[in-house]
Image 1 (cartoon, one colour):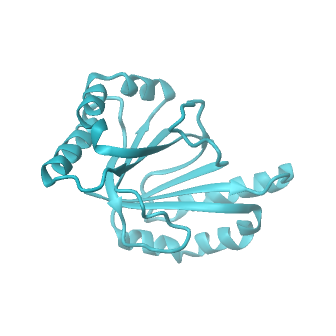
Image 2 (tube, rainbow over the protein chains, first blue to last red):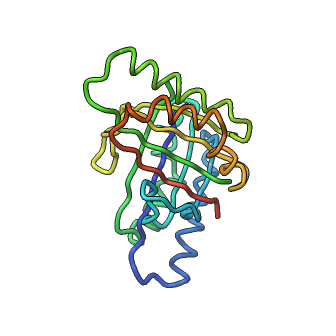
Image 3 (spheres, rainbow over the protein chains, first blue to last red):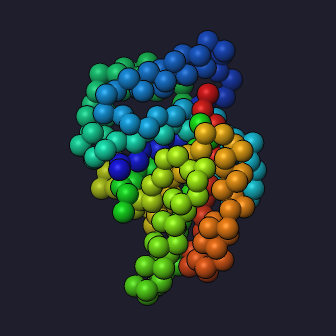
Amino acid sequence: MFVHIVNFWLKKGLSKEDIQKFEAGVSSLAEVDTVDVFSVGKPAKTDRPVIDRSYDYCLLTTFETEAGHDVYQTHPIHLKFIEDCASLWDKVLIYDSESI
Amino acid sequence: MFVHIVNFWLKKGLSKEDIQKFEAGVSSLAEVDTVDVFSVGKPAKTDRPVIDRSYDYCLLTTFETEAGHDVYQTHPIHLKFIEDCASLWDKVLIYDSESI
């Protein structure tokens, strides 16, 4: 399994409309057909020193193979999301892993 | 969906046996019955400035609800993993999120 995790820190002071635009855009990524597991989440209530709760959204996608992830990266839906929404975030941090 | 991501940075210079012990321990967590999606992965080959590849293992678990995650946290299999293997890592960093 190829696990692709993207944490987003949005710009401060976004309008409600901008946040809705981001949520709609990031949620559209579920439609890429090589995606297996999909979640867009906000920090949970759990709160311990080892938990980072500073991000705004955590995007989880999994793929059967790295090739499926590569299809996703260049998929028109993904490119449209970046084009429409990249101006809304300050920072992204990605963890890509392959199951042992 | 409750998404629980744990990135592990192991101590430097562990023996092959210690690494096998860690891998067996972390893999045993799949047996907790409230776990839905499960992956223990190592950094993928993807390499861009926004990708953090500095960790040694990424553990992904998902649960239907936060309550399922709470069962996992106090499950004997989880407690045994921590007891047996906590001495092997320098740092863990957790991202818990709930799907919007």
